[in-house]
Image (tube, rainbow, N blue to C red; front, top):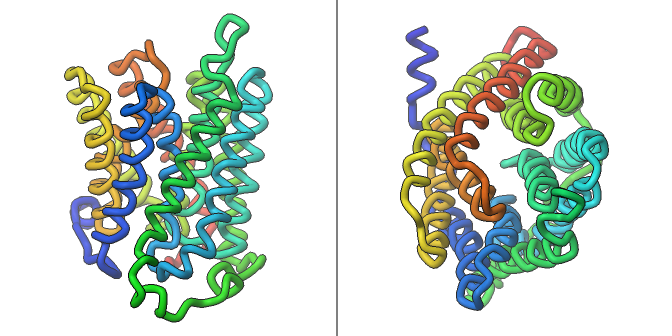
Length: 343
């Protein structure tokens, strides 16, 4: 128990400096929200904010390398958003689509060695799209094409932020690996196959259990939590630690969101709040996963509640704790598929 507590609170070193990717991630989040707010469309800016996740991938690659590979990430994120909008009008299609998007995006992430943050944001984008464009009383909350257009703008802005350093001649002269070397594959190693099997179990079991016993509209968060616990590392101990960190970080993050929700944040200031949260996430996520979840949870909940007016912040916070517990437990249990020794 003492070792578990120590691992839970330990803040480890970063494998490489994190402030550049943290700054880019913050700008990618703030730009769409801020720009659309300036032209009088703050809700559209929040719908575009999901595209900022494009800038989170391939953080250790050079700028020229990211310029080659990030368009593929953006296209996959946009495809997940499109799948969500297509399924949003039919509850059964939402559930089937969630399983399909989770399995396919995870298979691609593992097969091409995409690396951190793995497939979790593809699943999250699908779920957010189904929520934002859901049908209420026969009408969509947000028109699907309008949502996808906003999301695409968010992806483009995130890409522009990521490649902006290319204006510096010295950055352009740095060597860059070929796209094939950046994203080798498709090939599923033994560990990758085991991880994918776990994802399939979490996608199917999480969808069924959450739909039957929790709330069908919140299924994607349960599956997201399970996929996040699985992550990219094959090992029982890693899964158990990530699962406990996921739950503890979400509980604290939900409390932080509840406090933030007590204050009416003006739209221009919301862009800065989201940017600050995104900056902190990228700064600490490789150092302590639980601490990152303290900031990830209010970030996603702020986007969700602000993009869909009328949502109950307090109810969302408590629901996320329940959904996360179910997803984290599923992700942890699937770790027994791996051999006993950790690698």
